[in-house]
Each structure stands twice: as structure tokens, then as C-alpha cells.
Image (cartoon, rainbow, N blue to C red; front, side):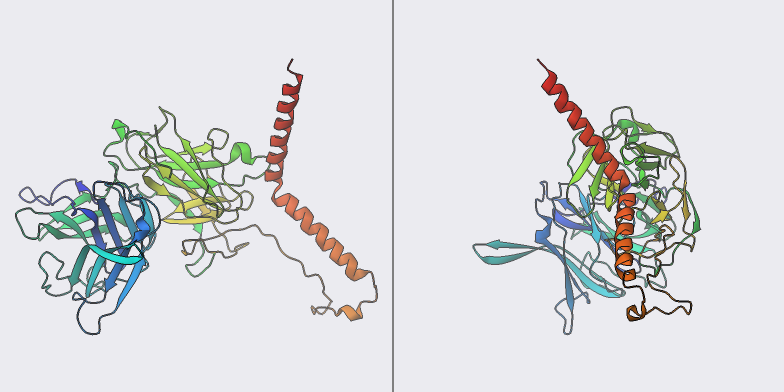
Length: 469
């Protein structure tokens, strides 16, 4: 999210850059419409266990008032280096944050109080420490330095706030009113002034601006109701400073024959900039199924993406693989910060691509490596599924159909007792079992083929070793 400024409100007015107090501090907040909270580690050292920290929100700017209720959300497990950010939102872009999660608490539009607390246990005694807090009100706010005159969602659904510092005032850390660029892009904030506005860069943890949505063509999609790190080292290439980050745009986990998983899976990136982007030292990271095991590929020096273009990286050229049984992919900068990520996907049917369009991920029957995505989700063969993050995504599956085992000319299931052939029922069971076995071999033929190839290589290696004098 916001880390500095590009431009100014007017020649005499310069919008303040984002700055936060020491510790794990609140940096940005949007309490109306599509809500989000961003925190920054400004402690000067790595927070080794984020799960010790909680957000507690009250439905009143005065948490001690009568009848006030509150709710809690624990931050996700993991570490956070100094200068890195945590973004809790309702889905969408990561905005350069090192850690992202869904926002599990609701922020009251008209009046509220949010605090960051840390729970520790020392000698069996629970200790609770408040690190930071913000209060807000649609009217006046009695607490100095806090947020007042919050517009309602109906009057300004893009309204948001970010933290800045003025050492001449008390308290020195204040809140600046801003507006997100659009409902689909929470990564860019425009500072609000009485006469004009200035854009704020929205990269807290690196020197990249957020990626722009890649162009795509949606042929048809499902409705919203359908269910459907590795730490790195090194710096950002000098040519990339000030550019927008590349965006993960498409995956092909299970290529259609005669293509193979070993050679023809691919991960595609999009460069939203008008300039070439240098991927030297950037990393692709994959996770298979529900396993926590991740594999990482580092782009070699000199790897570049042309302006406004797509680049598909096939499995034969990168040392990571995409599981057919579900997974997720991340793009990391050279320092290990997550700058783009896919939604988790479930079982990958043969020939279907997991593709991004207008901020959402879909299964599509039309893979488009090195080109803009085409989401083909015709009503034929669509089933429903839901990904791990809980957001509904369009799922296009094959047009396999399950035949009824028992049928009659009237369309009613026949009674087994009416069957005059005593061998018919066992034969049906055997046929179904055979069909299931053949179908399983067909579905996983790519994995079986790769395993056989690996076994052949191992056998050849052992044979060569035995033949050595």
C-alpha cells in the first residue's frame, strides 16, 4: 500500500508520505464498503511470530462506553521483517504486502475503535500489551490525532485513510484522508484535498508500484453465487525501481495430450509497464495440494519481460511443477516479498488453464500462453467449487456425464428383485469397477507417465554404476 508520493495536490500543497509509529503499527484503514486494514512492522527487527498479535475492534469510538461490543482477529502465523507489511482485506491484490489474509472482523462505518494487541505467556501468566490504536467517527472525534468526519459508504464508497507524521504537532502521527483509485484497485490511494488530489504510491515493502490488471476477454462466466517463503537476498534490479510489479496471470497444471506435465505445464506473467521489466533474482514459488511444502525457482540474471506483454515459462525450463490435485503459485521479489499470487486451485482437469480476468480466477477451456486470457465458461459442462479463501470463482470442467446404472423405458429405476438375470447385478458391479479403474488411469496418465520416466532414469543410473570398473 502507500509508502511515499508521486506528484502533489497543487504546487503549494504536498501530500504527506506514509509514516507509522514504532512497533507493529496501523498504516492504512478503510472502514466503509470493501474494508481493509494494513499494518507495518516498524520495530527495527523481525517479528518472529505474528500469531501473537491480534486485532480488536469496538463498535464505538469510545471502547469504554456502555453497551459497546467488540470482536477479535488473530494475525496469521509467520514472521515479518522490519519494514514489511501485513494486509487484511476482502480479497484481491496483495499490494506488495509480505503477508496477506482475509479480514475477519467488521469495522463499523459510523464510529469505531481498532487496536493492535500482543498476547504473551510468561511463567504461565498471560500478558497483554497494546501496540497501536485508531478511533474514528462520522462526526467529531474527541481523541486528538484520530479520524473524524468519516463519509458514509453511500456518499463516498472509495474513502480510506493512511498514516503520516508531523513532528510539529502532538500527537505526531496523524491520519490523512484519501480515496482508493477504484473499487477494484485498493493499492493506489489518492490524497484528498479541498481543491484537488495527488496519487500516492502503494508499495510499502519494496520499490515497486502495484501491478495493473492484465487485459482479458471474458466469453462467459459463472455467477457470484456459484460455488465452485522462502526468504531471498539481493536487491531489486535498478531498471525496475519505480515500475509496477509483474502479475501472475495464468497457470496450466495439467496439459492435454500429447503434451506432458514434465515439459508443457507453464506459469505466465504479465508486465503492465511501458518499459521492459528485469526479472533477475525474482522467484516463482509453488505449493502442491494442501501440503505446506513449497518449491522455488529463481529467474536467472538477464531474464526480462517486454513492455505490456505476457511471458509463459514452461515446466521444462523452470525447476518447479504444478500439481494436478490443487495448489497455488506466488511471485516473490529478490528479497522474498510476495508481490503477486494466484488464488488456490483445486483439482486441475486436463487441458484447463487457471486464468486471471478482472481480478478473479477462473478455469477456462482456452489456454492462452504468451497472450491475453480468454475465459470460456459456457454453460455446458460447468460445475461448482469453492477455493480455500472462500471466494467464489468460475469453474469450467469437462463435459463428462454419469450414466444411470439402472433404467427402464419409463425412466424409473428398475427394482433388483425384478431382474430376471441373476448374473446382471454382479456384471454391472464388475463393469463399473473396471470403468472406474480405467477412468482413474486416464485422469492420472500424466503423473503415471512421469513416474515411469523417473523409474527408467533411476534404473539406467544404477545400471551405469554397476558397469563401472
